[in-house]
Image (tube, rainbow, N blue to C red; front, side, top):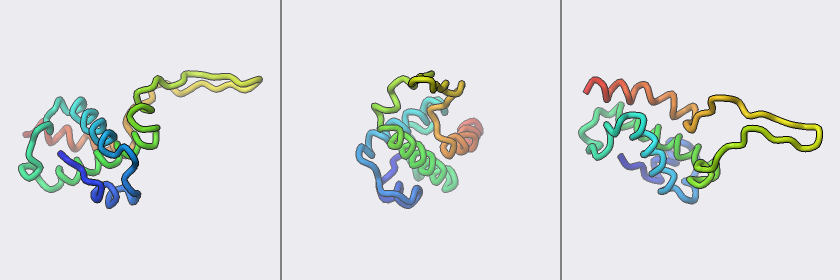
Length: 117
């Protein structure tokens, strides 16, 4: 499944980020891991329109989240669990997900279609 820069802009309302191709590739790999590669190598035209649209939305939202996190390198860095500065400290929440909420919301539809096929 391929996502063009024009489709990204239409879905997110923002211009495609620097490193667009790398962000989309990582988003596709994340999708493949969660759908056991069901969509890998499939012709887009062989899928129903709803699923094609949902796949493109998933890729756009996840690529946007990857870009906002600093690109592929930023996503691959370990997150800080806690930090202190003087008398102030913070602890990160438990169970953080690599998926953005918008992309995560689309996964049940994509997984259920893969299971029914």
